[in-house]
Structure formats: structure tokens, C-alpha cells
Length: 372
Ligand code: ADP
Image (cartoon, rainbow, N blue to C red; front, side):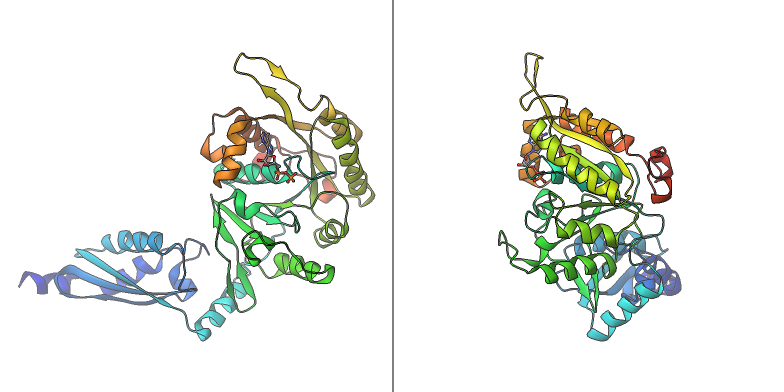
């Protein structure tokens, strides 16, 4: 008798509402609006069964989704247990989902997205490391953040974020991979582990263009682009595609690194690109005795900032915790927030100015970007 009372007691419309409002953890839209909720039924004894269609059978976030659905369904009066089954979307459903996302104008880089093109004169100065950590620090401050890894030959974003899966592709629309609260897209997702990218120029250009137009970036507050080092073709065409991008230059204190970085700065000036600032990486080596050694010289960051008429936003020390975090796939600002490099990187994230093309050279406080 009790069972029947429970069954009758469950309001299926309320169940649909509760479960339908659960967000897909990767697309950040409700299951109902995405057409992913196939069924939500009340059974006997307060049991309910929910059926959800996923974009891919390999959906890595299914456990999280199961937990969220169970929690949502459990809020409905009379529900005692929740069974969730996952199916994979049919081709028709995937097509409909891609269309829905496009109709919601949810794709792309928004008018209000602050784009930072992170550049360096040469490789190995920590440009990707700085990009990854700024992204995670900005996301932790409540911003919606994307990282486009455009360092096509030296891609390292998958490694830095510990991601070993491909993005889901939905009929011409790719979903970025999310890790540590940041949406990611990288050429590295499309090549076998550790393989070099052997695509020719036009193919790379096409791929990068698609990374901007056919990826569900979902209008982030901030998009950081990890550019290849130098002033090559990829950099130039990306900056043409993203005229709103502001340059963030990364250099070591070494004169040689600063000299080549200044070429990038001059390119930015020639392209009338706003400059957000300079980050000096590997500034000094901190010893346990409290002494700091300028292993790679000193002054390069400030010199570059002066030359580009911009701010030196921070100096990141050489830090073993940073190297270890890169290898472990969790940016140091998340894995070891007290490490000297993490503190310095988090500080740079708070100092990043909002720079729009029309406001070239006029730094505004970050609070305009997000909730920070
Ligand atoms: P780039 O993108 O400029 O080629 P990376 O970000 O890939 O450079 O960094 C090159 C190497 O230097 C990586 O192994 C990274 O872990 C290490 N590294 C970068 N910055 C620091 C730092 N401040 N302290 C210690 N190691 C660092």
C-alpha cells in the first residue's frame, strides 16, 4: 500500500522540471534545452528512472552528470531512489543539438570576450605555462575562460591541463574540452599522443579558423591564445582573424629573449594591436636560504615593457613546483597555490587590464571582465 502511495505521490511533471534543469557539465546548458532528456518516469516504491542521451558514448563526465541528476531528482517529493541510464544520441539528435546551439547564438567568441594573444619572441620562455596558469586563475575568479592553443608545432595545452581525450564533434560544431574550469582547444587533440603535426600551412590555417568559428566557445569572458613563438604566418593570420586581440608578451629577463620579444611587440604596434602588458618569467631562482639568484640576467621584462610603452604585470620566479605541475597536468595555481610561482601568476591575473582595440593603451581594471 505504501508503495502505491509513493508512486502516485511523485509528480512526474515536477520530476521532468527538476531533471530537465540539470546542466550538461560540458555544454553548460540544461538537459531539457539541449534535447538530451529522453525520459523521466516514476516507478514503484519511490523509484524513478531517468534516461539521458549523451553526445558521445565516451562522455568522460557521465559520473558527474549521474550525480547531478540523482541530486536533482531526489529533491522531488516522494522520490527514494534514482536510476539513470545513458544512451548515445542518434545522428538526427546530434544534428538537432548542433542546430539548437547555433540558434541560441551560443557559439563563438562574443563581442564582449576579452582576447589576449600570448606571445613570445622565442620558444621555451614559459609562454604556454603562463597562459595555462592565467586561464585557471581567471576561471577561479569567476570568469568564463577559454584557451586556444595555436602553438601548432609546440602544442602543450593538452599536457599542461592533463587532458587525454578528443573534443566531441557535433555536425560541424566542436565542443571544447573542459579541464580545471577552462575550455580548451588544441591541434594536439587531433594528433596521436606525442606525434608531430605534419599538416601543411593551408591546412593549419583552416584548422585555426575553424577553432575560432566552429567551436562552441560559448562567448567566454576571456579567451587566451597561446601563439607560436615569433612573428610567423600563423600568428599573423590569427591576429587578422581576431582584430580585437590584445598582446600579452612573455619574456625571460635575458637580453636575448627580450630582444626577440620586442620584434613581436613591434609587429603588434604595426598591426595597431593593443598591448595588455608584459610578463617576465624565470625571473630569479629562490634559494631556501632566502637569496634570489638572477639565473637568466635581469631587467628584460621591464625593458620590454618600457619599449612597448606598457606595464610589467609580474615577475614569475623559477620554481620547481611549477615544473612539477606542468608534468603532472594540473597548473600550479590550482595544484600548489602557495608556491612562489603560483602566487606571482595569480597576481598577474588580477592585474591583467581589459584592453579593447578602441581603447588601445588604456588599461581598465579587471573587474570589468568578470566577477573577479
Ligand atoms: P614556451 O611555451 O614558451 O615554449 P613552456 O611554457 O612550454 O614554454 O615552458 C618551457 C619549460 O619551462 C617547461 O618545461 C616548463 O615546465 C618550464 N617552466 C616554465 N616556466 C617556469 C618557471 N617559472 N619555473 C620553472 N620551470 C618553468
